[in-house]
Length: 244
Image (tube, rainbow, N blue to C red; front, side, top):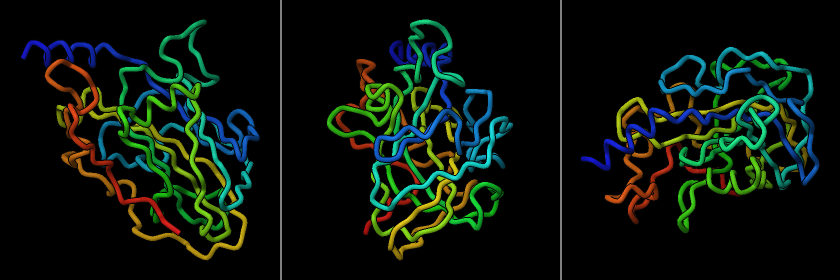
């Protein structure tokens, strides 16, 4: 109980939040806030049924850029503590507080025009995920990569315009229902290539997650306070990623 109380206290004090705000394609940085819809606030959503759960709320940064992503490309999503990155010099919580352990996931939704598409009523399918493996959370790897999360766009994804939803779930307080923290923004992309797969295992946002899903209502701590599930597997929320 004492360890649990300490953990809860630390979780309550932690405020090292984050915003997805940049994309790279095959190593080419596409530019700050180019083709990414982002708010000024770095605060999470904690209600899985929030109407803005697809691409976040109070969006302040938009433009008409649609980023070309060849199927099979190495894609990067860059996160920073606040818009622009560090909040202060030597910001210890940039790109996110180290306490905010959890998975990183990427979803796509096919749209007619990525620059103008609305975010409600879309069918989303997952193309990448990184949970807990070999003693590292997806967020740990993102921090080690100075804010970059990398994945390979599946080679079979059909060409066309998509919204690309990149999401982190911070689980430092998730042993209490409603305390998992969801960070997400959407980028505007245009997939090129000869793929024919327009997705599978579709989900809606909100609707894809339940507050008591095993990867959302979960204590990640062992009895010494280490946040790595005590050797137990972690179940990543949502469907499994598209395979080609």
